[in-house]
Length: 359
Image (cartoon, rainbow, N blue to C red; front, side, top):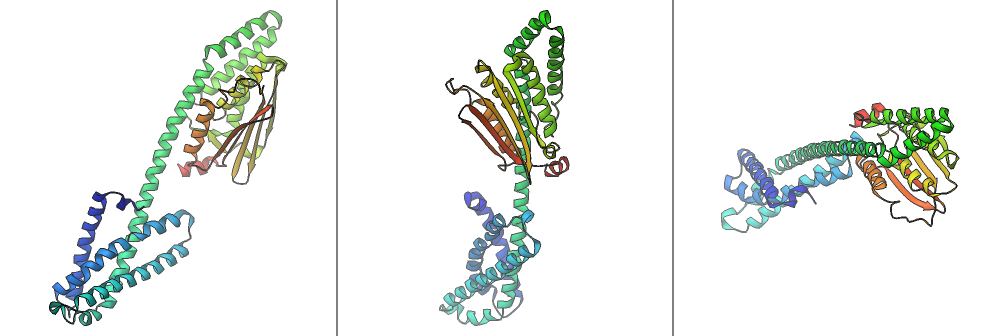
């Protein structure tokens, strides 16, 4: 439904504007001569009321033919045809009104006196419709701009929330306790591995903390951060954790929301590998397919283990961030397939320059 029709206040304001337009049409018609001002008012006022609603139609046309994705020639042809049709409707309303009033003694012969003004009325109807179309497109552009600003603000908020969530994961006493416990155990039997784990843990924390001021980063950096996290966990789990990467270099420069994959790899370890006595594999694949980037994260898990937390906050958060960041163009799926849990993401393959222009 047209926004103007959603409230009486908006409709009243719109009709008030059209009252001024009707007064102008009546005055121009009267000034052209051959018809009294009262006759012009009586004939054209009802026609203008009907035409006011006809001039709401550009809103619907604009929704079906956005400026960004429609050629200039198609827009011009469509609106000129619509304007001609609307002008004909305006003339039909005026003639019907004149014919109805012609039966009254006070307006006898008004239909004939109106006849010479039909080209003028058609021209004014045409111009008013085109003006309405321009104003509708301006209003829709303003609405789209405000919606983009709203989505950008929500994306920034979610990015900050993701950062805080990642920091909570990084500083989670359980995660740090396990890491430090593994380091302590390794110092007595394998000092080199203990030192390696300290370095990897420090690198992971440093990298993730450095993302605080960035909303989007190249997918290559996001994958490197996920790999750094898995490196720390791999030292802790040893041979129980195997990591497989299948990354298409073409997708690495494409931008992705910062820390998008972090909750997913953390879930893969926590709800998958950690629950398997003999451990298992985590596979990360990323491909660029035309204008899209496809990312898949798979991990083995115990299907008999409780599944209450496998669709929890982390997955909902990632799904929502994709929805807000890409305005519904992204796709997200998470489901078990036998003994393998698979999470799939698809989002537009944006370069830093394209993302900057979109913002």
